[in-house]
Image (cartoon, rainbow, N blue to C red; front, top):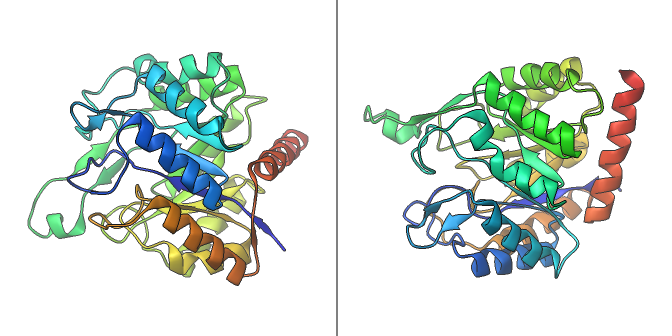
Length: 300
């Protein structure tokens, strides 16, 4: 019975005007993370907010409060986002050092196991908005920013979590990771969408295309499926059959839903079991990642 990692993405950068039931306050994010972990998530991903403005604010102290609050109740991998450069959701675009400063502070204190390092830039626009000639934004990850994120990960033994918005991200991520001997094996998270124009819609044939490229660029690397603005459920059984892992949560769901993260995790647990898998505990995720590290070092 394959062990399947279930990650939950609690909120994203959307604000409640786009995703009305996301947690915003520290207390609400902590409570939501605990509920999702108890429902079966081994990994919790989150965005910190300024409660007064309702907008993302990447302050390491806020992240530390959230991470410590969740970990006090659950053994779970908890990791923060980075400023969504170019979106307008999280302030102005900053330099590479500034963008990853909160992550480095958290890493110095031993509070992070994983980190967002997205190996490329992508146009993020809703399909319905494009049909009206309304503009989206460019999610900006210049090479200097990617390199800085990987430096922090290499220096503090933090695992990069790559969001693969477009297939070329897989090739770039593999090449960049190889430049850091001893870097923990990156997680390749294939990003699908129905509401947005990037990448592929969530269909098995497109998952197979991602996997074929991953086999060429980073054979044996751990991988997951996720996305933005989509229903990931049709991919869960194919993912389990192919030996992968999944992410659910309000960050990834179709915008405008009225759902809870805990309920999304509970449903994912059921669908994983229906497909012949079993949700992994955080300790099992860590053990599998360590095995991937050893394999990567033997092949280097």
